[in-house]
Length: 68
Image 1 (cartoon, rainbow, N blue to C red):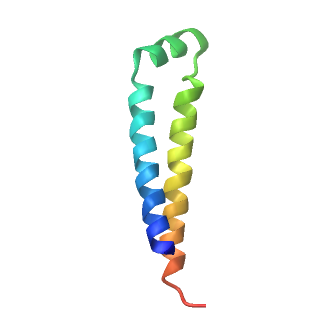
Image 2 (cartoon, helix red, strand yellow):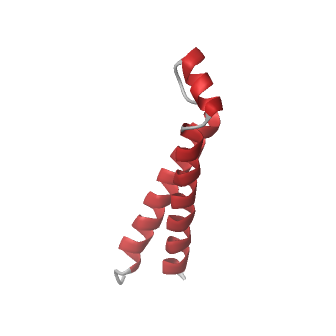
């Protein structure tokens, strides 16, 4: 059960990172960076969520193999 959840977290994390990358290279994000010097909030949340989900999934896989 833990492995399945870990794989799902990794898959969701990769999808979020993909959409975050696509958002980072969008026209709206280019305009935001031009005027504010920072990417849009949506881009930051997608990338941060992808990183957190991927790390959580990898941690779950690493610890699920150990017996208590």
